[in-house]
Length: 225
Image (cartoon, rainbow, N blue to C red; front, side, top):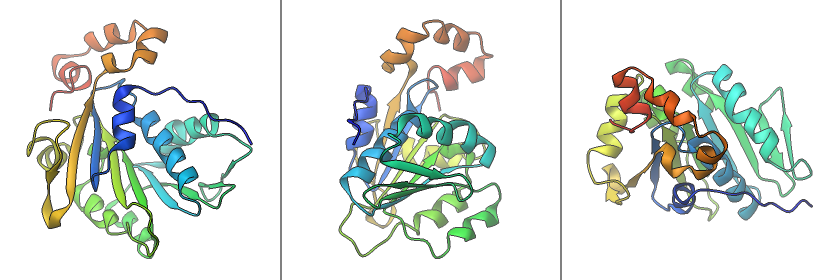
């Protein structure tokens, strides 16, 4: 079996080790949000044999060009195989990750009978509040594995307002607080400066963000909500 040696940032580590019921990671572009999600999903799958996870993007095109492509390059092939027709990845220990999408409101109902230990929303502000609330009801199971909803996002998008109200406004960053129904939540911000690997390999990326129009620059460079 392949040995796994993956370098992560301090903020990605904080996201991975977060134990709150609902976790939001990110804010600015380049902070390593999606990569952090995939590393976290890999570690969870290996730690909890036969566990089930769902990773979501709003559209299949976004899913295929980002998460699926990265996962295929990141996950060792001798322990992970991806079914290209069902978009389900299976591990040698029986764990699985479904790569899903919800382009329309009604797409959530395709998961009506599903059970997951962890559901992961990548670019949460692309989803509506209804989609989020409905899908977190699919986090359930009789096993003893941790049950969480772990999301990553930039500001902006159709869900900007409700995500800000749910995660950003109630408490300072990196602070656990109680949400509805006793669900513990936390917002872990990350900016491009926190991603030393990107800054080292592509030092001009920050300059490209600085060239954006003011609103986009404040959102993607500064993580300004």
